[in-house]
Length: 197
Image (tube, rainbow, N blue to C red; front, top):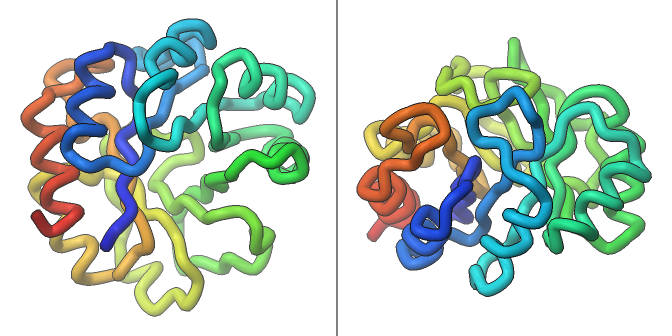
């Protein structure tokens, strides 16, 4: 069964809807320019009893800053984007955190540069949350497990899973009624369709 992450959550009802629908992970964004940004204390409160893996999505944090944030937010996994991502990801693995390793897909994909203890997350943009999909033909036939992101929602997740057979899927802006505000019906539909329910 496909692993599912719902990202960019900022309200208790959003977390509850995602987890109740069967999401395996919930993502919290720590990037001030994003309409989905939350503070570490808010993320800690939202994730405390979530019953799913909690993921800190960061941009341009060095290793020490990332680990400090993860501790403050109480997350079990990190998704480091931007500068310092290599070292930050390696430090997170060493600290016992799970790592989703973002990769912007702009052509045929080579995952050999991502260590085996990091899970590739293939997206259309270097930061994510744009709502745009990339050409899935670029990732057909990958022999390593990966998470598919970029422009996914209830309307296309089944087709995506059937075509490229990802280990997991991740959605954010495709589940919103307004920037930073999740549509709970879309959240439930996305998770249900991804899980084949």
